[in-house]
Image (cartoon, rainbow, N blue to C red; front, top):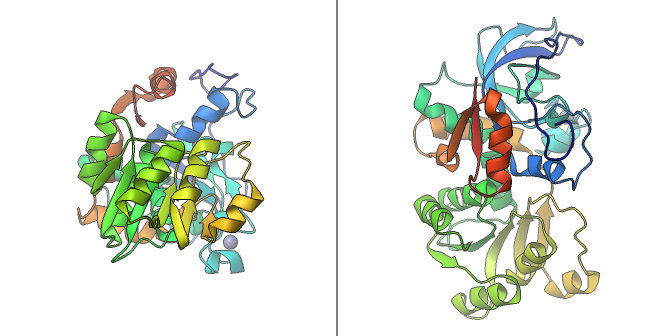
Length: 334
Ligand SMILES: [Zn+2]
């Protein structure tokens, strides 16, 4: 991305092994994330940056210390580099690893990428995936893992009513996760007809179109005046965040994964809400082995969040489609 709104596909030097813990992967599919729209829209600074942090592919080269993956393995990686061995990783928060590094700075909207801490970051699939599983495995790299973390952080589970604020790819994946985790009722907050349909496909039992205070009132009405036990915030704006706080019942859990620039949470509102909150960049690595297996066994089908597929050369058109909300999520083929 040369500058906001200016995406170009160009030839760059092939990545090389720098550290003995690195691997080079040949990327077989990548995609555009909602968070890539922040620099695209000029909210986050950008100046000739490589782009992309979601990826699946084949290991082409490994450093001398790499043991868990070998040349020829098909792998899915998290959008945050992690060693998976430090105390933070062992506690399940790999996105805050002492060696954490955002893959966005490496840029996986590319043919190849150098993945540091390959042993900790990459997870092998049981084999070369059939073509129809490619979108779902790619989704595991970020949106599925992030939506799953959000639902888990919100303690979605049996007997719970879960409300999901946001109908983008992550919100839809949180709905899928809530259903898999056994939630009794899943309320999708969406006013987009196509996304409502997908939300129902993934397990939403109710749709709320109202936003802000009206949205909060509607969820309270649906829950006997109490609010939802579990709420996922998957947008990251002032309105959506406060809607999520207001929707959570006293003692309930809010999982927030929308990247929130310039959101100001009034301390007094959070204080009187009396809720648990957990969020941030999702430790996707914690969930990857289980998610890969669920996809491999065809128990979940997260790949449906991709509603536009383009060759990598047409990445700029993909960004435009997502920016104009003509596409929920764009898959780039190589
Ligand atoms: Zn670590």
